[in-house]
Amino acid sequence: MKQIAVFVPDECGIAATITSLLAERGVNIEALDLAAIENHGLIVLTVDLYDEALRALRDHGFKAITQDALLIKLEDKPGALATIAVRLKNAGLDLRSMHIHRRENGFAFATLVASDNIMAAILLNDVLAIEPPK
Image (cartoon, rainbow, N blue to C red):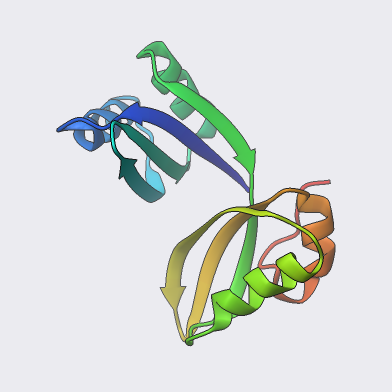
């Protein structure tokens, strides 16, 4: 699964700007995480029209990078994400990002990016929600 990370200034209305420009291009946002630290912000999203979203962001001067992410399915209970983080740590893999994508029917779906996604996919094969890209 692909996700897009957009580096943005921490300014009033930046979420409105990003979401509006994607809407104008007919892009549906499937998941969005926004974080701001001091004067910098980061928006991580998954969308239905991936290439169009990248074009829209870049056409408007935003620095957008793409990441291959693994989609995992876990029981929606306390400690489920910690178990995954510890498994990666014990294997010497750095967890670079993790986002809860959705919750349904007692399960949580999360995307994650590790320092080595191929090794992470092998390690987490039992919880992968979809096959990773080859």
